Amino acid sequence: MFADNLMELRKYHALSQEELAEKIGVSRQTLSKYETGESLPDIEKCKALADVFGITVDDLICYEKSTGMGLGIPPKGKHIFGMVKVGEKGQVVIPAKARKIFHIKPGDNLVVLGDEDQGIALIKEENLLELLHIAGSEKYE
Image 1 (cartoon, rainbow, N blue to C red):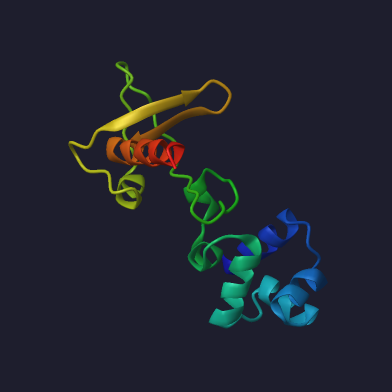
Image 2: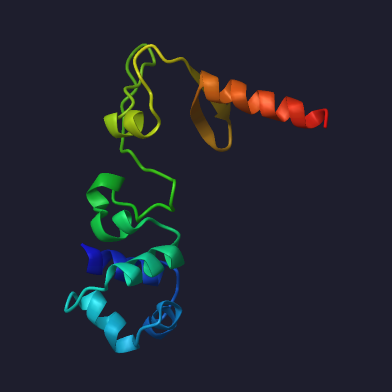
């Protein structure tokens, strides 16, 4: 998993083994061993690799394409929760992992936002009110 993720990320970011090795302070041969699974980096090198790619160490080590609809590792703070089906009345079940990460509980109010070019977004009511309050107070500074 780690070796596959590393190789895919390096190629996605159009880096040669030598370029990536230089960025994290190892030889090209060492990086090659990471990609073939012959050896594993220490935690500091894992952190350096994650930083180069803008992802978490956890995703670098554990990300499985099957959990992200076959897509690559998303940037840090971005998530792919999978596919949901819209019911007959427009209801959508928010995946448990998304509810956990965003602290969505039964009874919470969500605001549905839309952009015809980019799609639909959900935001907790309290977060939207906070954003509007901050934006409003900045206007008067």
